[in-house]
Figure 1: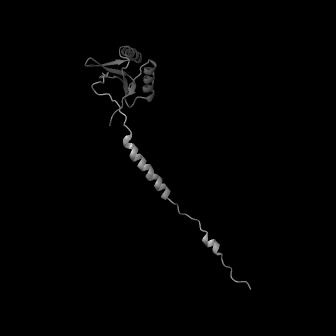
Figure 2: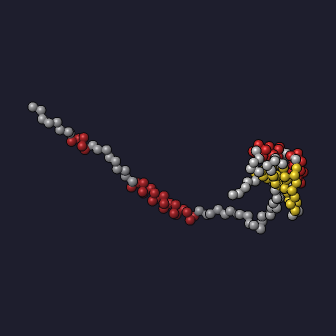
Figure 3: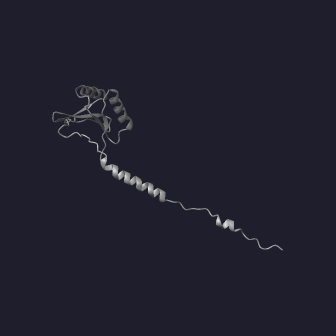
Length: 146
């Protein structure tokens, strides 16, 4: 007669070992820490010469020319000359000629476009495109702050 089946003792003794020995890693980290602590004071910091305010040349900012597009798509150009502010209604061609003349005198003259909220976006983009085509480098949009 056959007896009950017993599991062998070998299968119990062979369990997967899930332990990781971290002692060698700790030794390596301590050696690296000692190396960095010893060598850090020996490294000479590099010296960077920064410009001072006295050496900086003052830049004179040119006030921008403001091209205002009203609700009727009319252009109003506002600019400042020698402490005086001027406003003139102009056609698109007059505005381009005026701005081109100002660009010859001051090539970095900024131009800002301000438009009424009822003006079609296409009109604003056409004015901006015409200014860029005339070679005006600094063109921006004026926004209303809330």
